[in-house]
Each structure stands twice: as C-alpha cells, then as structure tokens.
Image (cartoon, rainbow, N blue to C red; front, side, top):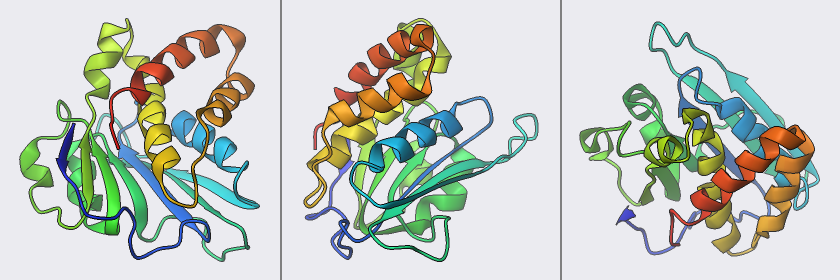
Length: 199
C-alpha cells in the first residue's frame, strides 16, 4: 500500500550512474541475506557493486543495517550516504535513518513493525507500507521476511527509469546464493513480496 508518493522516484539522481540501498532493522531479520541477494542481482546492471553491514545486538534492541551501493564506475565509499531506497523494519531504524533518504527516494516500511508516528515526518518520498512480517507468518515462518522484502524491492527497482531490472535476475540470485531446499521456500516468499507493492 502506498501512503504518500512523490511525483518522480529518485528525482535528484541518475540511477544508471549510482544507486544506494539500505535495509535497517535488527538482528535475526535476515537483512544480510537480503542485501546479498540484492547485490548479486545488481551485478547484472552495474560494473561495481559493494555490500556491507553493521550489526547491532538483538537483545539490546540496537539497529542493524545492510547496505548495497552500485554504479558503473568505481566509488570511494562502499556504504550508503543518502539512500535512494530505504527499508525500515523497526522503530529504532526509522528514528535513526528515515532522514537519510534522498529527496524523491523510496521508503519501504512494515506497518506491523514500525508505527506510523515514526514515519510522519517523511516528505518528498514515495512511502510503501509492506506487511512483510505478517505475510511471513502466513507463509509459515518469520524467516521468510527477508525474501518478502527482496520481492517488494525487486518490483520497485524494476519500475525505475534507467533500471528496469527483470525479476528473473533476482530469482537467479536466490538460486545461486541459497541451498536448493531453502531456495524453494525463499522463491515462494519472493513472489508474494513482489505482489505487495504497486509502483
């Protein structure tokens, strides 16, 4: 569901030149695996891709992040500075990083994990409310949350001018990075995630 949409996604950037994606949540949500799949898929469109993470303690409720930065030319800094796309999976993540998305950027947030008040100050972004945790439970395991999120992100990336990344690229990344047993259920979650957003 779209809560608020800007007129043009990532209006201030040419995404064929560089794209920065951050997933922010907590330990145990599988955001590192999600970012690995995204990075692998983006290698089809970009010559240079960097994936990195910062991992907080789940017990302390600190924020974990997983970043993907990609471009046709080498870049000096492999972490997200201003996100073209930002996924938020905890209130703490929203408090820390909601202000880091670029004007005209895209924010995905799970409405069951991040209360609307933490998103109230977002301006000039396209906000998609993606109930990934709820859908993961419906699929039988909270571990499906990350691939549901990848599915939603893949739909949005495929709609951006200059990118149009095909969903098959993400499916292939899942198959290459996960075991055959895990990939089957992951791909099911991925397809459900693709249906959760409508660019």
